Image (cartoon, rainbow, N blue to C red; front, side):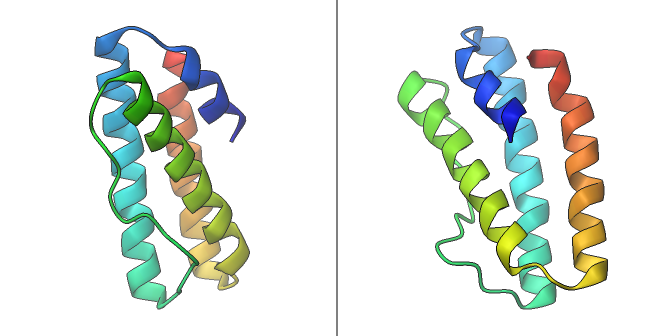
Length: 99
């Protein structure tokens, strides 16, 4: 979560494009987890914006952060929780390059 807050200050378009691609990839995997586990988080954003301007970029990060909070609240199954933590570890290692 803290890494997502740090990413708001990135102004380079190439970096933003790669960050958005990583965020969308993580969100797609979380969406698959929601469908498989039949979880129903409140207001889960299934797709994220891929636009690079400031408004849409910040909104993408906010939506991903919101999705992670909702998954943390509703995900009580051990296997689903393990899958989510593994995906977050992989995401964090990839995203640290851009902070």
